[in-house]
Image 1 (cartoon, rainbow, N blue to C red):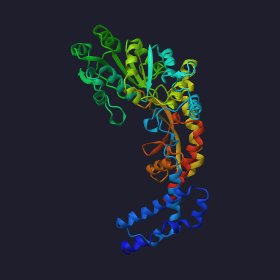
Image 2: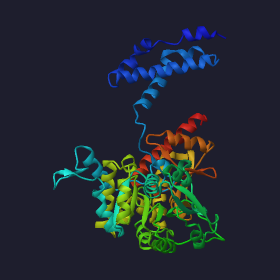
Image 3: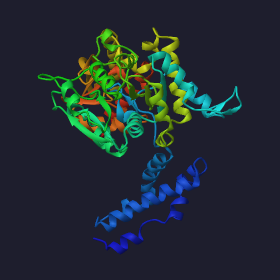
Image 4: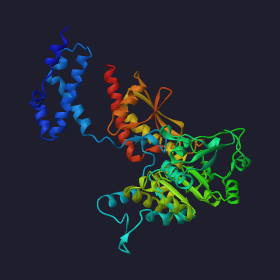
Length: 476
């Protein structure tokens, strides 16, 4: 065993690596600084292994043998961190994969605004400073019947802003059964605490009655808060208070009612067999004074927090200093306006043009046909290295929406021959673009609900490469 000092001295120098013919060739087509960083990263890895006590052999320190690792690191450094992935999970609004894909109109709107200047906060007709929310306020009023509207960067920010503007230092009454936790361990009570409002819990986890709210109302009560449990469901011995009843209490006591819808939909999905999920318009018609919801869930738009409500309350919300801290940016605004225009201009076609709605409403027969097509393409790429079939499965809405709404689907199922299914799944994630699939009962599942037909060749080739690599690793 060689001493640590001897091994450290045998690590090639950066200059020595740069003189290798292969690296000299790469330097003609890749940024020099990135190439040097790749080399240094590989050499630093060797140094760490030696210092950790590994006994490296001559082949580990041979400059020629290090070239594949330098190349792999170079490719990784040049690849954007935020990149496209292929979602084969069947989870439509996948929070970790960016939630809602945008319709083509929204993508074009973002491109058009991003490449130059815009009238973001400029009133062209008057030649003076304008307000950014006006680009979508009229559309939101028309689509929902709200008196006024504004938008911020996400729904958690919307709730924070509303509570701070309307209830700072005062009490907000909410049912214990609605003190939800959203993604990333953020909880409604924590958001309320940051807003400066004081939480007043009423009822129990499974039962809250109107009388509970009535008894809790006091001189410090500023708001009655209704939180839609869009990411979970309590079933069985339960009772909650409808927005309409809460609104009646609020009117009688002069207390505004805020309804945090969470997901928020303009389309009554129950009419097509999905749900139940309250629509934004129904919440307002039920008497809610302020409604908040996300733009990138069931609406099918970009990440945004949308706030609708009574004009006097909305003015107070807009004037709050927090409104600037959480304001929406121009690219998100461009995408949101484009999505809202689809709802307004093509109400019957929105279900087909907005990807999230199209995926949610896909017919099982079409999904089966597409799964069969994908399975056949995978068979051609995978050869005899796996058994490929089509089987009935369940998709999910995802994104904290429709917790009871599992959707019947069909999936292409791949059962690898004599290799680990977890290894195949990992290699799919290493593909470019990465393919994110599900593993179930020893098979890798590919749900066409969340894939475009144009994605099928990439998925099939990725499966073929993964199976080929696992076979090579197993010596087959």
